[in-house]
Image 1 (tube, rainbow, N blue to C red):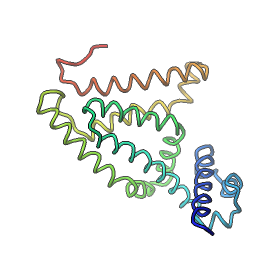
Image 2 (image 1 turned 90 degrees about the vertical axis):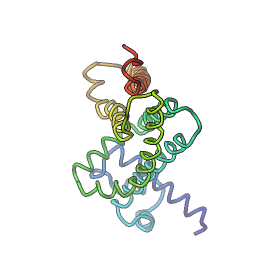
Image 3 (image 1 turned 60 degrees about the horizontal axis):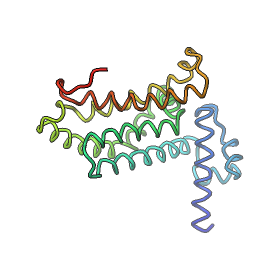
Image 4 (image 1 turned 180 degrees about the vertical axis):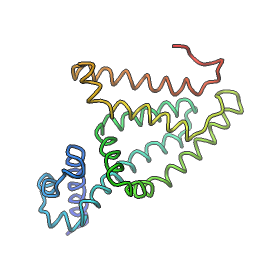
Length: 213
């Protein structure tokens, strides 16, 4: 099989797997459904990925690689620190907006199979370490200049992720309890994106420079 056909087939399987895993979760997803959606037979799916487990991890790895590359590109740019952080929070939020079911599926799988934590760690630990080290250096420099309070890069990342992820994890319950229409919820999501950015940026400012709501 020519290399370009090989790549196209693999990507078609990954795209189909992503759709099935995110709609049904790992347990309920069937390789037969994935193969049918990808337009291939199960034997070919097995040839490329061997197991459903391998396919799930390949989908997750592709998502994380994409997100990490965007984040690292932002950190490597020449824009001011506070603008970088703003873009970082927005990038995370937009990623989740494009993949709203991903947090629930990943957390569910970690709860179901705790050993998955190790495989996920192996996927992201190197990139996360680089991001934290680079961000920490910029945070320390800004603090020494009196522009921000002393801040841990890890704390900052956890705060941003927590702010962004919660909305998507709680989406079905929140929308049901508030009786929001889909249109109103979309407007609320756009509002929350800006609120999350404002919250994170304000938390970095020295006490005397914080904005009161």
